[in-house]
Each structure stands twice: as structure tokens, then as C-alpha cells.
Image 1 (cartoon, one colour):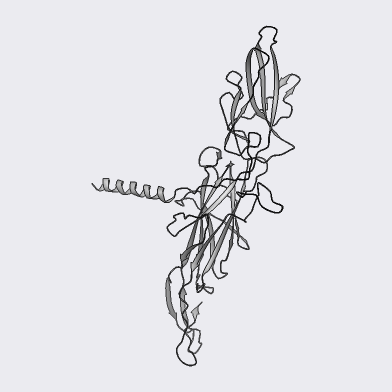
Image 2 (cartoon, rainbow, N blue to C red):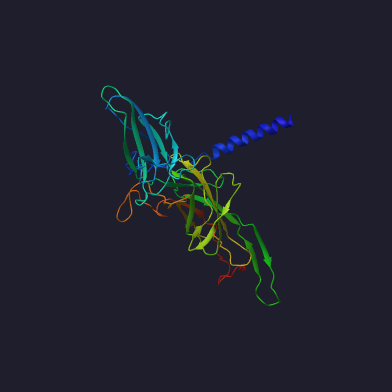
Length: 372
């Protein structure tokens, strides 16, 4: 009976965690005009040809290459992309690089990569007329598409409450109650008449949680964080995790000026790419109000803390790309707009604790000072 009760509780907990951490929905980039020659990573595209003449049986050979010499001395290039080793192709449809199963159309899904005019990516289709009819010859021809991928790598952020439940509004300001005082202890004078007695206070710590969903990327990406509005008396720790259970947190490096960076990367939970459905990471900001040595942050006024997130893809070869906003912007306005810390922003406000002011005596008599 006890075992059955235990299993029931485990099942309920699993359901609770699953519902609590339902993934944030990415917002699409609305200003992009994607097509098969300008693809968005992670989405399938169909490439199709029509060969009306001459009559005869056709053999279709599709392949992707970065070799500009498609045929040399009558021989096809052997430098053809294969999955999963390819750095540009995420998935191929039936008939890829196989004339025995190839047809007049092919599905390709692309990885996230930066277009390099000096080293373009090509989709090649070679068609052979393998049997003649009437006066038709056994012959072949070739056509080539050039691929210029669109950067649709996006980040979206949302606040989580103290229970780590993601809130609606993509970062809309939410109120948070500041932590109760943990300890308050009288500290006597170091010597009679020294006048250095007081009350040693520990104002506790608050932890702010966020969810960030990244869409349309492949291989890996790296986050960075910008914090503003934090009082200089507070001691800050910033971490991120690939999972909502926080089993493998990564502590980010304080680079100064509210910037937090990392050398760690985020990789797909499965496969080699993440499409428009996205994949989330979770951010945790710990604000320690007292360290027992330096002056404490008392929190006597509301503290609005702004967290902005930025990201850069980390391909195994080539150059990474920054995340873009959902609409055109910048100066001059462009699409896609690599927006840095400008738009993926969340605000949480720690509400003030009571500000107690002495009104005893005339003139007013002071409280014991707060230590340290």
C-alpha cells in the first residue's frame, strides 16, 4: 500500500512539473520573405523541376555542395553534403544524392549558417535522359540553385514567479515581494563607551526566475545577460540551465557593468537543429541583500530590475549569427534586425519593505544603527 501511494505521489509530481514548465511559445519574425532560395533554418523546403523534353525516361540526381566546380573534366564533384555530418544541411528527403530513387522534387531542411559570398552553398540537380524514344538521345543536363539563408534565430523571454511558473506577457513587469528579514541581533559595543553597538541584520535574498525560448538555430548558441536597476549594495549571482529542474546550472561570469557572459553553450535536446517550435533555457538571478560584512540593502523603495538577454549561434565551422527581432528595426531600419539587448527584456519589481522612521522625543531620538 505504501509503495502504491509513493508511486501515485511521484506521478502527481511529474504531472505538476510538466504543467508548470510548459514551454514558452516563440514569436515568428514577421518581416522576412522566406522561400526555397532564402530558407529559414529548421523548416523543410521543396525543390522541384520539370523536364518536358526530350521524350524518354529521366534520372534525377540532387545534391548540395560548396564546390564551385560541379563538373570538372566530365566528372561530377564528389564534395557533396551528407547528413548528419553536414554543417549546412539538417535533413534530406527521399532521393537525395541517389539517382536510383531521385524524382523531380526533393525536400531539404537547412541548418543555421551565415551566407558567405566567397563560399556559397549550392543545390545541384542533374537530369539524365536514360533511354531514347524516336530520335531522342541518351543525354544529360544540369541546373544549380544558390542558397542564401535568412537569419531567423530568435529569443523570447518571459518572467517566472517565485514558484517558477512562466507568466504571460513576454517580460511584462511583475511584482515580487521582498524577502523577510532572516536575523536581527543586537551587537554590543566593542568596548565601554565606544558607541559602536547596533543591530546586525540579515535581510535575506531574493531569487528571480525567467524562461528564454530560442528558435530557428542549429548546433549551438551562447547566451549573455544584461542587468540594470540592481542596487550596488546587493550581491548578484546569475545562472542558466537547459532544464526547468535546474539539474545542471551554469554560473555566468560577471563581466562588469551589469553584463554576464559564459563560455558554455546550449545544444539541441535532440538532433542537430531546433525549428520554429523553439527550445527553452531558464535563468536564475540571486540577489543577496546582506553578506554580514558590507552594508546591507534594506529595500526601502521599490526596485525595478530589468534583465535583457542576447544570443549568438556557435557553429562548428564558419561565423555565428546574432538573434533577431520579430520586426524590422535599427538605424537604418533592416530586416532581419540583429537587436542585441534591445528587445528581449523582462522586468520584475521587488516591492519595498516598511520604512520605519523614529518619531520619539523632541528632538527625535535615533534607533540603534543597522550593522554592518
